Length: 273
Ligand code: SF4
Image (cartoon, rainbow, N blue to C red; front, side):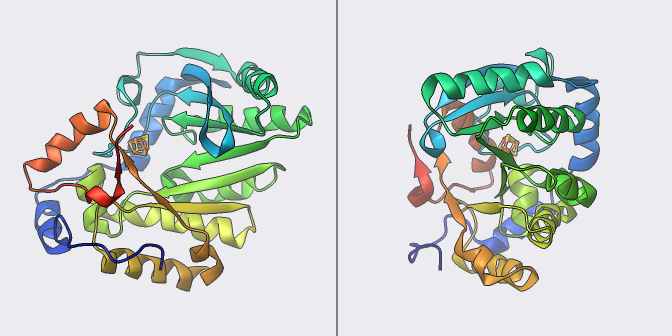
């Protein structure tokens, strides 16, 4: 199992089902398409920052604007929902910036972060093409919530055509009800990232997935992992990453909305920066 015994759940899965019934739920595919029309212009995409980061032992990062989920624990600030922030960058220019940061600091990894990188598909593909054409010898990690990859399986096959790519799918919840409560999205969309994992597995693309263990019971997560193993293999489960809730000020502010339902994260999975 991926974690040791946990001491009592902060909110039961049963209570979450009742809270989920009170939420209408939005469609994250439709929201993603709407956001894409604003943050992408041809092969340009909106960013708000390029930087070096200590994650993955050091990585060059482009922080992108806009996401199609509304996670209650999200650390991304204004650039998640306010699409007026940031600046458009051509895919080639974004790739050059990432390579330059990675080379200057001796990093092996480049990635996009903050918002959802699969929003702005044309830009992403052009970026990958340019990186590949440079034979730059770095690894591009595509960090995604998996919604659009699950909705459009052809896109999974498309990224499978690139060398030097690894995909990290971040699972936000252990059940459709938890997904609705934590992200505000429709319950059915819970299955899209799972479908993305199935597609990645069947195309033999390098990937792993993370689980956001701060919410949901141990039984709930075990049951989801069993389901994923059934659809793929137990090897996939063996590589799971347990993601902690990092309590930045933006995350703490958003989490207050859940507190009125008595929903709080399990402190064992909360990290204060
Ligand atoms: S945590 Fe990630 S997927 Fe969730 S809203 Fe923030 S950027 Fe989007």
